[in-house]
Length: 219
Image 1 (cartoon, rainbow, N blue to C red):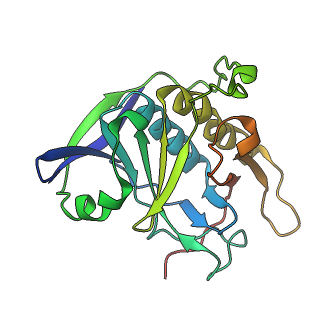
Image 2: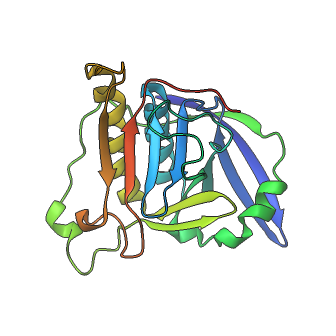
Image 3: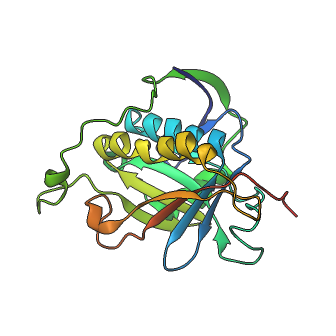
């Protein structure tokens, strides 16, 4: 599978950072900080796009994958105006050891980017083999760590945890559009990344992932 992206490079002192963004904006997607939890609201196309970027993060340990979302509209009914704070998203491998506090400066130095096409494994919807018992071992280090900095959620993890959890977004992409609309004309389908599943570290908040088919435009 081929994924068109924009590749940016920015320097901070002697360090150079490679930042990858999707070439096509994911306009029907929102990431909202609800204080007690985080909410990702996506239509089918955006959910698949996030899954692909999740897989890209798994195989790009020397890059930051940046998904601009803050300027998007909100899903009609699911998140009323004024509810929570909109966030961008950055996915990165823990070995990069990037400090989220540096992000605002790095982001300000990004140019227009260079178009490129990357190859990813086919996302047929098949769930990868997961050792669920191993997730609950004390020695499990394949956990997401979260930081919110400069209106951006940082999801930092291993290649393994990115590969295994891309399936959550693929499920929303595949199953969400199949649900019958209710009396309001909306559908409801959701899943979540939560702490006691052995996916998030103890300080991370639940990520609620909801399919939304009706959207309002940005103000």
